Picture 1 (cartoon, helix red, strand yellow):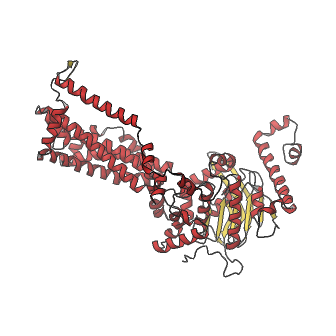
Picture 2 (picture 1 turned 60 degrees about the horizontal axis):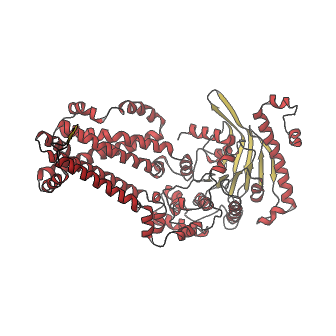
Picture 3 (picture 1 turned 180 degrees about the vertical axis):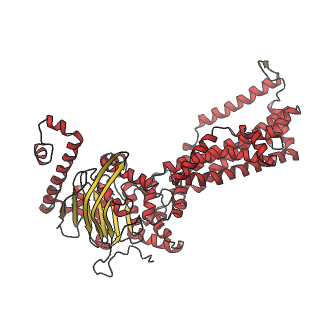
Length: 315
Length: 298
């Protein structure tokens, strides 16, 4: 936050802040005494009961299981009876065939190899995007000059989908591997950058002023205020970025065609291994789900304050 | 540097020697687009070492802005701002500040918040933890050292905020309507806590508020500001004895002071409103737009 912004803020705040600000912040507890202790005491004695109350209700669970089961049964019937009514299930393998295929695939070293290669590309591309996107977003949020330099360029490049970069990327990079990692990087970079920047805008200026009053240097501000203060938005960016990274990776693997789970899926089509198509799809879905779960887990670990009252009971 | 918790400016029971704040003929003008606004004109203020001084005035008079000058967030357009004779150049740990909005770091526990100033000075983990625990113990907040700010009530958050600002023994404590967001009962308790704390520490305090009783109850002297552009309306000493307690608020002395201050501020508030309404409108009502006549009418 530049001095100019602080000036403006105060110029504006001085005019009529008193009354509305007081009302806005009114929900304070009536006494400065040990209220949270009583709040903690009100917490349910049986933690599992609270967990159940918080999680999905029995009805929601039952309905969820029911809808998935219905989907599988419909799929099974459609492929068993070779449904052919505009959409064609003539060549589509049933769920049982796919399940059987999965059992074999895990013994198949080339399938496992493809999965590992895709994971490595995701790790490289995504981590690079995070390593560049987060610091760049923080610096752009802090220094107007940097923002004015980078923002127009990033806004110009952002609407181009990572997939559209595939031919250019193959020309740019010496190896296919590098070009695929680059595509993955591009896919996740912009969501991470934009969300970090948004986090910097959303950061309450009073926290920065408080830190400066407590003697924080510019470097300390980044480490102690900007970074932790924007973590919630950074993790939103990482979650979105991870999703886009998978989309970009699979497309790049399908087009440039050298190993990976996307390549596996496309090749299965070429080789008329129809069960493998579904296997590839399911595998991509599971990997995507797992990688966003990992990010959420890390987010929970590095942002213990966001877990709210759970922490209080844990201590 | 010293990690001695809550070390006031008093050298072993003597008179406070540091924490002298001076504003000399301070002007503040803000440019927004083509408009320029005179927020403060020719303001003089002094906080003597160990003194509790309040700054009060109608809303928009620039009292918070002046506090931000002392904090170092705003440089005066003209005039001088000094702490212990040295010109103020930007914010620093020698001036502790408590804000109206809750300003605890939500990602840090209560203790980590109090440790923040020590950490910025490079004090090692063990020493700063110990210092923070001592301070929280004195403030009666030790039981909540591992709580996050979101788990505290508004009054407790401000108490932690005050402890955090005092932790590294600043020369002067700046408070910007710190209890403005609290309800009446909590505010009264917090005022008592603050005045007791000050009584022990004898640290210089500059306190901005729009609450007249609060200013009288806490202060040695009160600076009343005019409506914008902010100038000194009147400086009033508060001769109430110390230590202060809530019973004093019904003493004749207190009542008289309250009436004086509130008359001064009402006059200025009306003036500010009159300016916003525009002279034309008031002319139509054939009222003298300025000051006492209008005040008397209402």
